[in-house]
Length: 149
Length: 149
DNA sequence: TCTGAAATTCATTCCTT
DNA sequence: AAGGAATGAATTTCAGA
Image (spheres, rainbow over the protein chains, first blue to last red):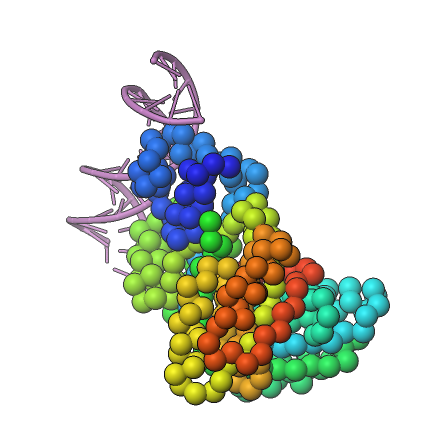
């Protein structure tokens, strides 16, 4: 991976629908070598995919909560818990951490009432969970815009 | 926004580079009305943009840390702090929260040594910060794949 | 709002440097 | 590895239903 590959990644992180021609012009290449590089980056898994970024408010997901969760620290509990998360669509992101809390979720729902329902019906019902701590997001201070390259 | 618009959003969140023809076929429309809807969603800000998803390991950003930060709760401190975050590229995401901690960052760096450097040189140097608590991510349990629609 | 056709632009392959 | 030309597709616009 040289400077040009990094430049390609930078451009495609900013605009994933750039045409190959525009992209080539920006990175100072002609169309065919540029396309070869993009294909290679995709094949190598450096580019994992492309996604449209959707406004959460527009689809009724404007209420976001970070949830710290403690899970019993045995393998069965952890695996069952993490598997259960996959089936809750409102959980849009989840991390297993060293130390405490053992897990952090980002949840996106319509409003407080929807979150209350999710909390009582699903979060407190998860097996092996010993503690749930919800923190409502007041503001996104820095949007995820991809990685610095 | 009707069922078809939501279907369009679902497809483009999964593959942001779908050709308009493929997209049209999937949502049961012919090419031109499909394109008009996509343009409208873009114009309305429902689709905020498109991004390539880059493998963090491939670009030396495979070491991720969640950082809880307490900031003095006066307007000047909060604004200065949040502004300062914008200039730290390793901070890839930041949320201001109700309650405690006042702020949560997600940071992506190359390795522990790089994080140590960032912590001592920049995080502890931020004005108005009264507490910094770092938690290293062991595993991404659920990848952000866009919002459920 | 959709369909279908027309004009333009783009992706993709192949061949040369 | 990169550039350039040729091709086959796709995007995009526009008229009509």
